[in-house]
Image (cartoon, rainbow, N blue to C red; front, side):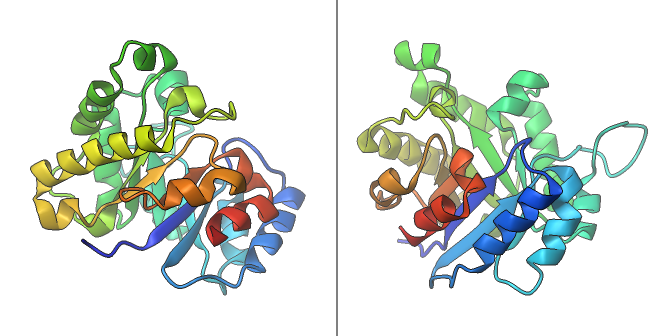
Length: 248
């Protein structure tokens, strides 16, 4: 089996202030780190520069929450992947369910954003997940694999791609699928990646679980065969909780 470095990624979403970002970052810098574990923080755009400066001497990586498909142009309010790279980002989240819902981003939009991330030398964290209605209809696997198939750029090397499974109904609700359900979805994702890119690349891509992961359930989730880390929302806003997940 491919050796994959565990990735614990914190998505701060539209949260933080300058003071909060400093306090949180200082708390995370106290983490001594663990072999085989990578920590990533994804603050809102206004705090990327300051947070990047604060973690510059640490092992913590910096990422952004989205990017535009184009490198430049008349796109008021948008940010290019190249700009993120200039700020020291090494990752960018694309296709989060909140972007798909709030901004109408389609699979093809997400694919273009992931291509832009690769163009700029960033690793794209491509998000997929089903709604509660889709889960109740028994459509989880078909929805997730269809989303992923449409969101993946061609020729993605394993080092430039991470896939995050976030069941929409579990994000911020405290609810999670069973560990068996999570493994079943991740195994289906792994299978699609191997079919699309070949076994070497497919088995090298890291798969994250997102959706109310916290210190109390992280150990069980992270022990699953095809779970290689977590994309953490609310729990990433408390250094103690985020470190607790990383330590799991």
